[in-house]
Length: 202
Image (tube, rainbow, N blue to C red; front, side):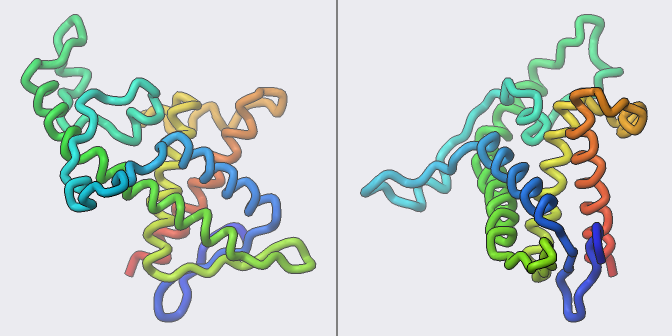
């Protein structure tokens, strides 16, 4: 079980983590929470139902990592864009409209996923051997899957990983490269994500 998720009888998954891994996972999750931002709680006296229909932003985030987490719904592939790289005005308007009515909910869902990770890590009891076994219910496994995916997208964006070459030269970085710790975290999260997916696959 060490280093990878395994399925639990009756659903759910488990993985053995040492203290360092627990600390890294929690730190990354907290940083992702800060990146996503706080939720918009209804003000005192405000109708909570009204908050559900509040309009969100219409423009994509300026932070590249956030833009990766909250991409435009309608975008022409780069190869099909004009020489100046501009997108059709119609697509921009469609994307803005879609974002306005969906981004708040998407942010809330991503926030819930990461909070589930932090809470399950905080609930662990580390043994005298310096580790613990994290056991997740089927529902928590889905939260973890979403959070691991978002963590990898965020780190991958910071590392400028492309879809065409997701690992490429990352494996060959020298230990002196300042990106090396982030690369190791990226690859480790990928392994966790892959094995968690396997536990959820019938």
